[in-house]
Image (cartoon, rainbow, N blue to C red; front, side, top):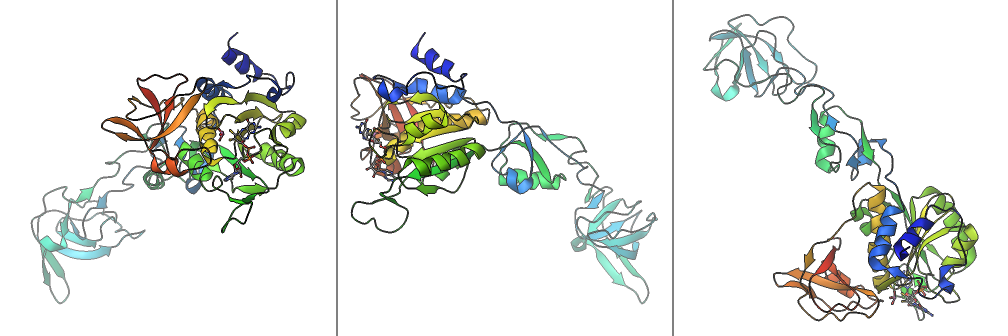
Length: 413
Ligand SMILES: Nc1nc2c(c(=O)[nH]1)N[C@H]1C(S)=C(S)[C@@H](COP(=O)(O)OP(=O)(O)OC[C@H]3O[C@@H](n4cnc5c(N)ncnc54)[C@H](O)[C@@H]3O)O[C@H]1N2
Ligand code: MOO
């Protein structure tokens, strides 16, 4: 049994087998195995019917169909006169947009003034735009004439699409324009693959969420980037919640959020210090630990577990660049799995610059793409997001790498 098989087989069990892995040397799994475990730890969420405004950013679970003919009626394509028979035409009425319509059949030699989009009366053969009309105002009768070829400037019912037409395929992302199209086709709700809900818990007595950090404090750099990264991956982030160190607060928050969210991301408390409570709390909650440490730099203390209720927990190390590394390794693949999307494999490219490899761990190196290949941007120490903010991707440098192409993990733009 390979390491991957052994770890993957654990996810079928709801009982934590054996002592927690922090006590076992070498519990860290290879980086690529970790992201595969995360992707396979979840199943695609079932479709749900959401109001239009809530379905933005989701993917269609079924083809988008027209619920009505489009246009719904034979309508004028220009402001002017709907005319019947040969010119000249006696103007006998007016039809503006909305529910007003000319009752009865327009007889040859007559016209009604009409607004763009208004239904043309039965018997109308074309619409003569104002600009092309010669108008003669008499004391009683107004008469118009002009060249108006048969069928001109009338949009026929269903000429765009008829009721039932599939206009977009299942899987299409619901962009703002898809929302507009869907509304135009008569939809109030859409059947979509819902975006997985990710709760964000930021732990640490030393972490402050605004202003200048006082002595001994550090400004939270993870709460501000995680929701955007989660949204970019296709998930929906809850408001970040800041927790003090201590088992009680973490236990309470994990019990509450772990029950309602598909995934709970916990930043900090992932290591082995006295204030690092994540593993003991998970053990007490009866969680099944699927990944306990990953052979990656930075970010090796990261963790993936399943709570007894089924929700996943991703443990992100407190160092912000290590948290980013873990989010890309475990959180993004889990979100994609919940969306039913295949694992994202980045393009492979040459590394144009210095990138020392590690003897046993994968390194994630901040790079920018260029014509020469991926150029390391530097400044990518575990505690700093400087390099990540300069970069457009992270290069995956395997253990003992000696050159050759590397995979690029795209960063949110
Ligand atoms: N004895 C060991 N100590 C440590 C190990 C280890 O294997 N054995 N691993 C180190 C590595 S690698 C990392 S990464 C960190 C992970 O630590 P935790 O996840 O337990 O997080 P903390 O200890 O709370 O914080 C670490 C570091 O990051 C700062 N921090 C925490 N949260 C935030 C935040 N939201 N925004 C910005 N900075 C944050 C915190 O102040 C610390 O400086 O453990 C090492 N130690
Ligand atoms: O995960 Mo830590 O150093 O690798 O920041």
